[in-house]
Amino acid sequence: MENSALFLIQSSYNNLNKIWEQLAQMAQSDDHIVIMGDTCLAIPTTVFSSHAQLYCLENELGLLSIENREHIKVIDYAAFADLVLQFKRCITLK
Image 1 (cartoon, rainbow, N blue to C red):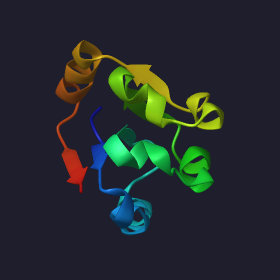
Image 2: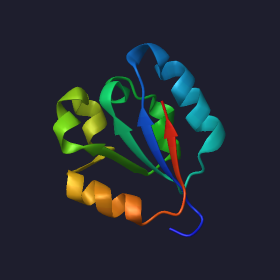
Image 3: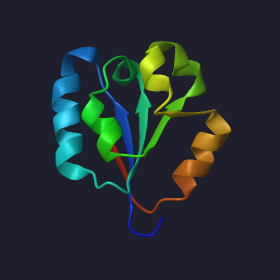
């Protein structure tokens, strides 16, 4: 993933609006995004339309709404580790 970045999004529910705004300002359409924790609870539809590479850890699958699951690839910890190793740039938003 030469030019794209990996975004790790993990935020408290109270801070989600700010985090999604930051992501919209920073991320490009070819970037990959891993959502974790409370971030899984409220994902704006604009994220799905502008980012095709969305991931969620399988132990947090229960936090995703049924509607959102079709847009997000669920991965285990081994796949998460493999994904992280593919990128030169990793950005964490909390």
